[in-house]
Image (cartoon, rainbow, N blue to C red; front, side):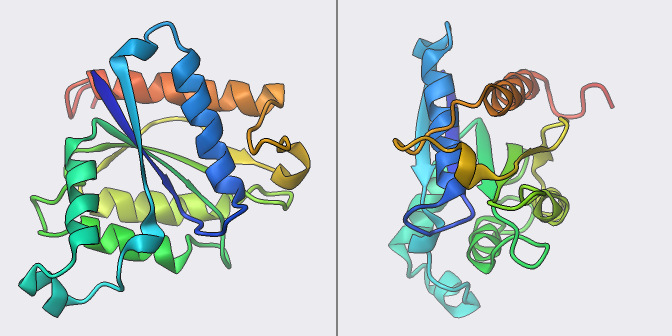
Length: 191
């Protein structure tokens, strides 16, 4: 069984990045090997602001559950908007929580696929480099794949909140394939 945890960098109710993840969920369910894939969602908006005192007191059930989800996952699939050329603070906050304790965090060794979406012409792609740097600093393995950035996403999204545009679907399906390949490769393979 391969377990994916989907994480949107946007907490907006009508989030384009949540729609990217809805499409990923659908594509995973349509795969011939779908019986061997489990998918869960981590809502970053449920996590409190990172606070070392709260961490030391182990005082947040939401953080403990987020860490359990990520620790039990084979791969994370993160889709983020770009806020001023970077990931939103709520996503960075979640990664700060998930990066603890250093060296043995739930992110250590985890395979992570990155995507982005925005109503603009760049599709939020500028947030991906910073996100990749943070995820890598947390000890995770970023999937080696061409950037998947859904441009003019509001125009492409269907009324049901999914994407069916052939280019978007093909790019996401390719990223899913690369993620599954990376999950099956031992850490450091090909290096």
